[in-house]
Length: 124
Image 1 (cartoon, rainbow, N blue to C red):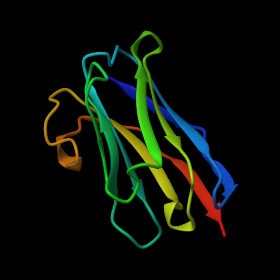
Image 2 (image 1 turned 180 degrees about the horizontal axis):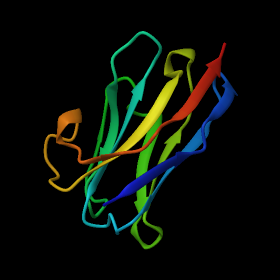
Image 3 (image 1 turned 30 degrees about the horizontal axis):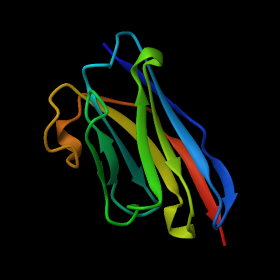
């Protein structure tokens, strides 16, 4: 069993930056792909970014490409999401998820484990 805990959310002004962390416990996730998703009030959860098990491959939603960077530090069992140039429309609860498979990483249903989420609020 894998437990995922997100941290690093908060309130930031538009144009600012935040770094989210997804810490895994229970077992190592070094062989898992990890994705970040977000859900804004009244909207469906959507894909943000994903990284394969080694960190060699990364994937981004068009809406965050060039502003967000996903990375991982397997020795710490942690995945990061660096968010720069934040916009009010980035306001959402951000979730990380782990997948044993490694394909179709933009699809929520492939993920085996989910965290509880961390709130990101961007003020204009």
